[in-house]
Length: 252
Ligand SMILES: [Zn+2]
Figure 1 (cartoon, protein in one colour):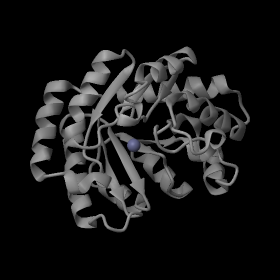
Figure 2 (cartoon, protein in one colour; figure 1 turned 90 degrees about the horizontal axis):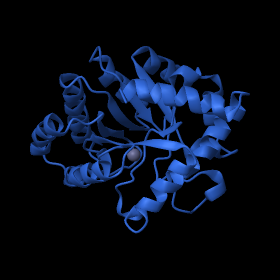
Figure 3 (cartoon, rainbow, N blue to C red; figure 1 turned 180 degrees about the horizontal axis):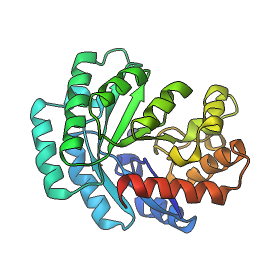
């Protein structure tokens, strides 16, 4: 079985063919999909999607991209919603220092509060870290016992080892399928498979062979194939170990 450990299947990009997309994935043995929440007004829809299709698992959180939509009250709402609806994780939350107009202090406020919520509910945290790995590590270090994953990991090898030591998995998607991603591919090659997850981040981050097309869970097969190549092993081995890792992290 294959698990897509990060896919925004609730986004409107899939409104016209969500059932077909999920069926295409299932017929290629992609049986489980982790669906992260990005802002308060998406949680309800994620819940209905996950109720409707078996194999979809919800997470609820406040993503830094959508900071202008968040209110401090939403953190309170998040706790109530988590308590009631029992997701597999808190997130997607994190820090994005790549996009210049996102206030760093405000991002940190929402991120750290959500890390505390994850600890409080004993849930893993789905983390977005773009040009911010050092700051993310710093926030995690302040909270012993916190578990989680860094989605579409793009930090250094040394930072990856620190994160693993802190109880985090590193997730890889479309970017690893590009020959030109030499730094990322070298990193994946060196990392122990026991700490790797695979994802699509669909509809974003298309794989090399489907460039410019909407991404979907089916294309995780290319991600698996690339990682298998880098580790000199077969696809089945990567499928098996990454589903085991994902199941353990999210308690599936
Ligand atoms: Zn995401």
